[in-house]
Length: 102
Image (cartoon, rainbow, N blue to C red; front, side, top):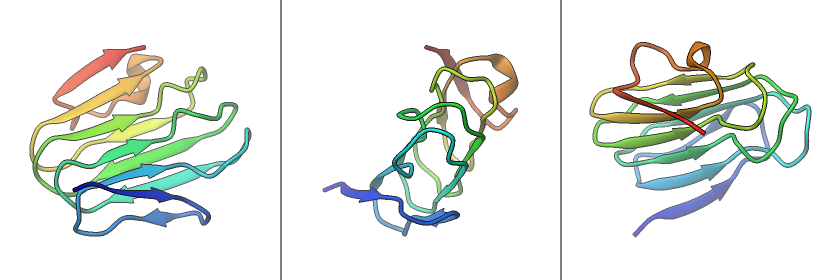
């Protein structure tokens, strides 16, 4: 199954497991989230007015969410097919295989 993790530190690191990782609680908190497993869901889209960097280092299909209402964030995919949910194109790196605007 999928492991759910709430970040309390910056940077916040995942593991080799399939995980859903959530950014730190509160607006204006910069987050760096690194997922290392396959098929991770990395959420930095709950709080706004911050600069979040989300990295998917593993293979498989990863889902990177930085669509938080500001355009200050970065979604960086890894090996495998990565979906990046963004507010603006500038937030999606060229490592995103599919960019979705929300």
